[in-house]
Image 1 (tube, each protein chain N blue to C red):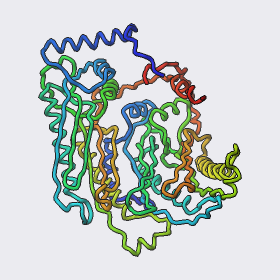
Image 2: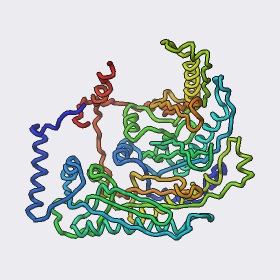
Image 3: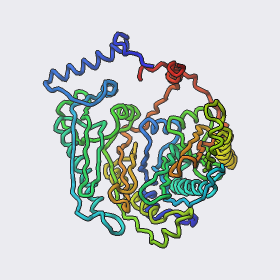
Image 4: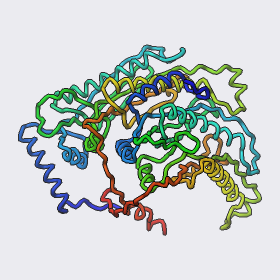
Length: 279
Length: 265
C-alpha cells in the first residue's frame, strides 16, 4: 500500500517550512551543505537542534606481509595490526575532515572493510553534523558513529551521546586435524575442537580490543555491534573475527524513558491480499 | 572461579570481569536498547556461544520415510553446546537473561559435514535488582527482539527460555509405479504428506517438552524452519524454535492500541 506524500497537509507544511528556514539561514552564511541523509533524517536532526554540514570520508589501506596467511600457529598478529591501523587511520581522517568543516560529529557512517591476502582496507563515509548555529566554533572532540541520524536523534532525546567507533579484530590459525583424526571422525557426531577453539580465541581477542577501545573513549556502552566472523575466503584454515559498534555514554544525569505508544499497523493485511493471485 | 562445571576459556572470564565494571556491549539497535531500558532492564554485555561440529553419517533407504536419529542428535547437541556456552557467559556476568538471541548454522570450506553453530545475544539485568532468572536458576534466553521483549512485558508475561525441537527426516521417494499412476491426476500424495506431518510433529513436540521442563505456560514467536542443509532434497531438518513464557502475576494495564496508517512503502 503506498500513499503519495501530501505536501498540503498542515503538519507536513509546517515541517518543511522549518527545514527550509534553517537551510536558508545556512545559505546566508555562504556555505552549501551536502549530506546523504534522507529528508526524514534531516527533520529528525533538526528536531533535536542539530544540522548536517557536509558529506565526509575517511579511507586507509595497510599492507600485510607476503605469505602471512600461509601457515603458522596462534594469532596472526600482523593481520590484526593492519586491521586496527587501517581502522584507526580511516576514523581519524573522517573526524579531521568533519572538524575542518566545522562539524561536531559524523553520523550514519557506512563502514566498508575488506581483508585481502596482501592488504586490509577500511573506508568510512558519513554525514558531518553539528548543533544548529554552532557555526565555526571548533568542537573539543569530533565523534564518528555508524548510527543513523534517526538513531542519533533518538539517543540524544533519551539523554545519551555517541563518542566514536570502537573496533576489534583478530585472525587466528586453526590447527589442522591429523589424517587419523579426520578418518576416525568421518562417521561420528563430534565437535571439532580445533576450529571451535580458534574461533573462540579470535573472538576473545576481538572483543577485548573493542572493549578496550570503548573504555579509552570513556564510554559506558557499545551499541549496535556488528559481527563478521568465519574462515577467511582465501585461507580457510585461518579464522577471522571482527566486530565494531558505536560507543555511547549518558550525557545527562539520567536516562530519559521514551514512553512508546502502542500502534497497530493496518498495512500488512492490505499487502497480503493480492488480487493477481486469484487469476 | 569456583564453579568447576564452567568450561569457559580463561580469557573470556577476564573479559567478562571488565564488563562487570560498568561497560556494556550489545548488538541491540538503538530502538531495541531504548525499549529494553523501558522494560526495566539494562544491557550488560554481548554474549556468544559457538561450536564447530562434525555431523556423522547415516544411511537412508531410498524408498523409506524415517527419522535420521543420528543427524537429529547432531543438530540438537551442537545447538545445545552453543546455547549452553552463551548461557554460561550470561551467568558469569550475573545477568538475568539474554534477549535477541540469534541461532545460526554456517557451512564453510572445512570439509563436508562440518558446520559452525553459533548463538549470539545481549545479556540483560533487571534495574530494580530483583532476579528474573528462570525456574532452573539460570538466565532466561529469548529470541524476541527488543521491541517484542518490551511488548511482551507490557502484557504481564516474562520469558523463561528459548526452546527448540528438531527432527531430521528422510522422506521416501515415490516409486515409478506410483508416479505413473498419478500422472495427469489431481491427487494428494499421502506418503509425502504423512512424512512431512510426522517430522513436523516430532520437532514441535520436542519443543513443547522443553517448555514444560521450564514450567512455561506458553511458547510465543514460534518459527518452524525447514532446511535441507547439505543433505540433498529428500532429507530435511525441521526446526521449531520459540520463547517459552510464564505469567508474572504483576498487575497489568494493557495499553489501548492506536490505529495508524503508515504512509511509507
